[in-house]
Each structure stands twice: as structure tokens, then as C-alpha cells.
Length: 290
Ligand code: HEC
Ligand code: HEC
Image 1 (tube, rainbow, N blue to C red):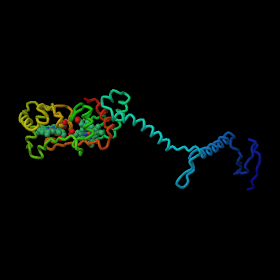
Image 2: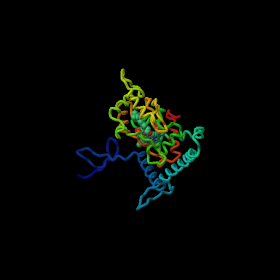
Image 3: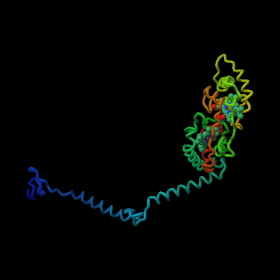
Image 4: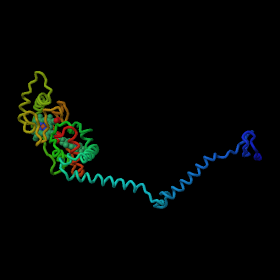
């Protein structure tokens, strides 16, 4: 079909000459404002190409006239942050706990750092906010096994408990059942006594005197005659409602049969002294600090 360019009677515009079944195509130009914006974008892009890093080649790239680099900008920010933090962390490492506590700004840095360290390293075992889990002591309850002063906590965290560290806190409850020191019936009896008197779940009319005798002969040295525990031995307080292994009679039987002797890692090999002090201050602040 021959193309015929003509004027459209309604709009006054030219047609392109294309026609389909009597429908003619108008030759409508782009709006001027749209074109100018479009050209401005091209000019802007060309400018950015020249000013900023753009065209890659081989192993490098064109760095741009301004020499800007996002990586360098981030590195500079990080370096600034480390420098800022380093000043505070160096102070925390050097100062005594009392001196840190007397400096509110420094204390804030320590508690923030301690909270993050705790969430990353301690929470999986000790639970959020140090609430504890079966086998992993509550740190917020004030029911300390080894001690809850800042120095105690620092020592525990640095060297661990039953860990490979030479200065780790050590103690081992005897394997009364597994090593045949007590017969199963005796274990049941002593569990009845501990459950009724110290854990506070007495059964009416129950006679626990046999268990009391076994306790006096075998357990008092570590746990105390009133079940008060002994921090030098890391023997938990039994007369309490906070229990390492849970508040059930079965945990008493299983502990006397085969003690679990939980291991707390020695963090001194993984965290620097300032970070350990910070996490000690954080743990101490959870509510149970002494
Ligand atoms: C792999 C599990 C695990 C991790 C991780 C862990 N702990 Fe422990 N922690 C234990 C166990 C188990 C005990 C109790 C050992 C015992 O005495 O029977 C303990 C005991 C403690 C105690 C002594 C509590 C007391 O009553 O005297 C403190 C303090 C403590 N942990 C702090 C921390 C801090 C701070 C971190 C993180 C830097 C941490 N723990 C990470 C397992 C863990
Ligand atoms: C040499 C010291 C020692 C002696 C003796 C000892 N214990 Fe323990 N006991 C511990 C220690 C340490 C723990 C905690 C760490 C572990 O073994 O898991 C513990 C934990 C326990 C627990 C768990 C407490 C909790 O909070 O969940 C019970 C219950 C217990 N002992 C009962 C006894 C009874 C009953 C006897 C006597 C038959 C006894 N122990 C003798 C040191 C001792």
C-alpha cells in the first residue's frame, strides 16, 4: 500500500502515512517538557560517569575525577568508631570496677558492650537476660553457685568452670550411684529428704529420717547441714527455689546417681580483658549482683 502523508482534519496533525483498515496513525511528537527532562537525565548521567567511579575494565575500573570510594568512606567511618571505642575500652581495661562505676559515661559504654557480648556468647546457654535454663544457672536470680561479686564473675568468666583452663573453678560431686557409693534405695531416701525439706515439697506423714542420715553422712560437707550450699566447693544451695537442674524430684535422683558436672567455657582465650569486665558489669547489673 503506498504511504501517503496527509493532515488530519480533527487535530490538524500530520499522519505517518500508515493506515490499517481505515484507521490512520497520527505523527504525535513527544511533549517538550518530557524531552527536556530526558535530555537533562542523559546530561546528568554523563556528568556522574565522569565524576564518580563508573566504567570497569580488566582488573580495575575508572575511579572518577572526584576519586570517591564508598569502601574508603566505610573504612574511614569504622576506623573512627574503633578509635572512639578504643579510648573507652582501654579505660575499662585499666580502671578498677569501682572507678568504672563512678564514671557514668564509661559505665554506659561498658553496659552496652556487655549486653552485646552477652547476647552473642552467653545467651545460648544462660538464656535471655540471664534467666537460666536447666543445667545453665540463672545469673539474674542472686542464687550464686560460685559468687556474685564483680570479681567473682570476672574470675568465673575468664577461667571458666571445669574447663581446660589451669585456673578454672574445679569441684566434682561424687558419682554416688554410678560408682556404687549409695544403693538405689538409699538414693531414693536421700532424694525424698532433699525434696521434702530443702526443695520444700513435703508429703504429709512421710518419714524422711533415713534420708536425713544419708545426707548428713554424704552431702553435708559440700551442701551444708541446712542445704545452704558452699561457694568454695561450687555446691549449689539446695534450700532454694532456684535450681540448676530444675525443681523436680527426678533431677535430684539423677544428680545423686550421676552428677552432670556442667562445664562453663573459659572466655579468657576468646574475649579480651576489657570485654570480660564489660560483660561482668552487665551480668552484675541483671538483678542478682552482690
Ligand atoms: C556452653 C554453655 C555456656 C556458655 C556459652 C556460657 N556459660 Fe556460663 N555457665 C555454664 C555452666 C554449665 C555453668 C555452671 C557450672 C556449674 O557450676 O555447675 C555456668 C556458670 C556461669 C557463672 C557462675 C554462676 C554462679 O552461680 O556462680 C557465670 C557468672 C557465668 N556462667 C557467666 C557466663 C558469661 C558471662 C558467659 C558469656 C561470656 C557465659 N557464662 C557463657 C555454661 C555456659
Ligand atoms: C564434693 C562436693 C559435693 C558432695 C559431697 C555432694 N554434692 Fe551435690 N553438688 C555438688 C556440685 C559441685 C553440684 C553442681 C555441679 C554439678 O555437679 O553438676 C551439686 C549439685 C547437686 C544438686 C543439684 C542442685 C540443683 O540446683 O539443681 C543436688 C540435688 C545435689 N547436688 C544433691 C546432693 C546430695 C543429695 C548429695 C549427697 C548424697 C550431694 N549432692 C553431695 C557438690 C557436691
